Length: 121
Image (cartoon, rainbow, N blue to C red; front, side, top):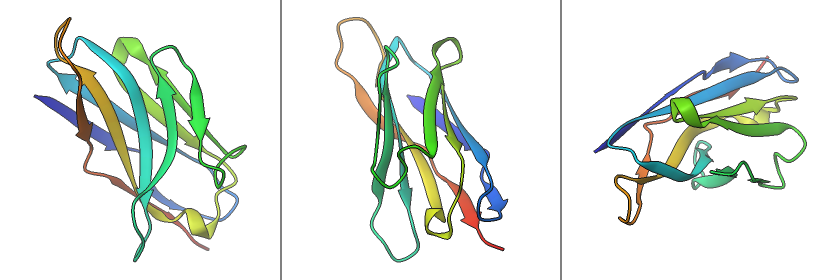
């Protein structure tokens, strides 16, 4: 089994910054991809960003040029640096990770429990 622990959420003023972290632990051989999603109040969960094992990144248009995803493979951790935050970025942020438990096996996909980010005066 794999456990994901997110941290770094909180209250920030518009224009401010926050850095989220998500650490994976458990039976891990490799992590092909790590992602961030978010769910705003009353809305469906939406994809925010992805980073591959090789460091390739992709972003939703709504966060491009403001958010940056990175990872530390030695620590099995993914980060989301969020700058120039807007009120519409208020949401619960979830990490989503593909984990291969052993060589030759297919990956499983896991979700964190989420961390709340509130952007408000």
